[in-house]
Length: 415
Image (cartoon, rainbow, N blue to C red):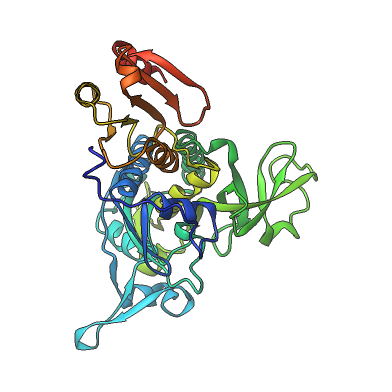
């Protein structure tokens, strides 16, 4: 991508209303644009990051046996009345349609996936299976805050699993815990993310959250010093020792939730008469689990975990481009060399942002490059061209290397 053609805009000034580092940096670096409180546009840079995160999540959900679907955002009131959540869910957007019809804008999809599954489940032989989607969700948050960490419209992955018995659900639940930790490892936030016990509500004694520690977090968690499992603030009073190892030594930390999982049991199968016939021909309710992950929130969390005083430091797995190629000066040989490097990297499957602009100083280009946070930077100038070289730097490191142009591709692939 030629930077002169890229649809984006950066700014040096810190956002006046930014409550979180990620909010400030994503706006200043041109990844998101705020339309109104809790609602954001993702620019080409931001959308590229979202798609990379989405790809990692999709791969892991498919490996865990999930089949992808796409369910409607617009949902009938009747389904929400059946589960009692039309009146009990305070963040539910309710809208009026023509002919006195009422609808919900989906904050979650149990009211859609349960009747969908009913059309395909008849016998124990139809179980187990999992359906997941990546879908826009809506929640009428009383106070949207911290940029894309808490919004009213957001992109989310939700997986629903269907089982004949509790033991099968329990085994799948553990499988998803492992899948989630693998996702967080690939996203570069595993070392700051903790499996956190939370209240189970009407579902079970416990549900689980995945909480990433950050000063911008709204949640308080207590991390076990012994096994590194955590407990959230809402259940800590009734959980004086760690549920995993019985230690009573905890460290308090602020955190943001980047995922949650629940054993739903029959809470959403019973209202829709979602049953199956067992081996003896008896009708039994399907047992369900649900597993959520906010993709746009995860994007903000990654920035919270990886930045410095100059800007964002994207992990290679989610960065919008792998290399930021910067051309300094308008000398014909510099331009020819930079363009050839750009074309060669692209031919080899390396995504490159090529700063071909001639109206920006070296200082402006470097400052913007650091703010945007692409993992690798290669600089072409009269000085480097004279030596058939480029200046090479990793965003997360301070050292600058001079490497031969012929070695650049290998260096990029090995970095």
